[in-house]
Image (cartoon, rainbow, N blue to C red; front, side, top):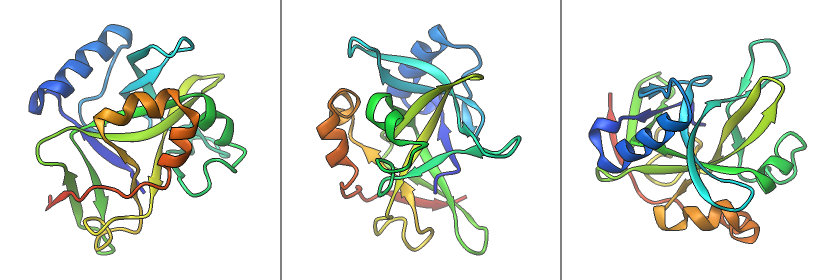
Length: 186
């Protein structure tokens, strides 16, 4: 599961550029530790397949009042009624400077990628409240598995455009192995 991540523009020039672009298109982009329901920077493709950066709230409305659905499993995203059409037509990428997971003892860990941005696969959907985004999770790699049984589906910067605009590439990407990460107890 991915329940929080870090978006720190002052730690990375690329993330700062993304923050500035998102801030031009949306108010109140959350920086620092990002929680579900926060407005966060996202990379997406418009109807003409042009790549753009904007802000959007994280979490689909749930089945109960004030419930948010923040993650979708890569193994079932194409079959679940709530997710399948949005995954097919409105994919997005969450730019981050790391993500957090907790172990069974409730200790918190930060996962990073050698001072590089971490990009997380997702998708979005428009509801009556507006557009909302969701993160895709997958089986954990060796970096994450000692801490948690799920991790975000990470994508290399070079693959973002194809993930956003190419349905076959996005379908195949759901089965990718994840890169090894640096982990730090925080």
